[in-house]
Image (cartoon, rainbow, N blue to C red):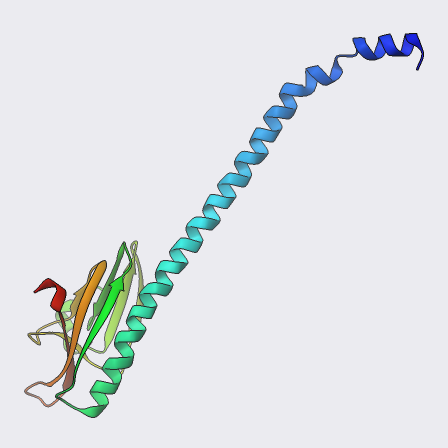
Amino acid sequence: MTEKNFSRFLKNDWAADALPMRIMLTVIVLGAVLILLSGGVHSLLEKEKVYDARAVISEIEAHAEQMSAKGAGSNVTLDINVPSKTMIVMGSIPGSEEKWPADACNYYLDLNGKRTIGKSSAFYSNSTLDGGFVLYPGPHMLNLKSVRDQNGKIFIALSDKSQS
């Protein structure tokens, strides 16, 4: 490299002028990546809560359907944990709680205001046989008892031993 080219190289400050623009572009790109990443993590955590809540419902349903098929007199205790910001209602559907026992075979899952409705072959009730049963977030010792009402229909009466 000649001395003339070398002095021109030292005087060229074009890269220094573009440095703030490069830093700003890098910050914007990193910010966009972080926003996308946080959205993905939030979605993944919500899916995990739905999966956990459906696992709780599945466990209750599996026992309830067998108890219902065997007739009145069965008793099962389950240790379950309902995820945070989740409510499970067995024996009714949203907005139709007064229609019990007509919709006692329904249940719904409420997760952050999003509701998922399901149907079961078992009929659910609270321990006094006058409505559905609500499970709020947290650990529960759930007692399932198959009972026959005055009309001969078999209900799975749910009660929470941990709240007694």
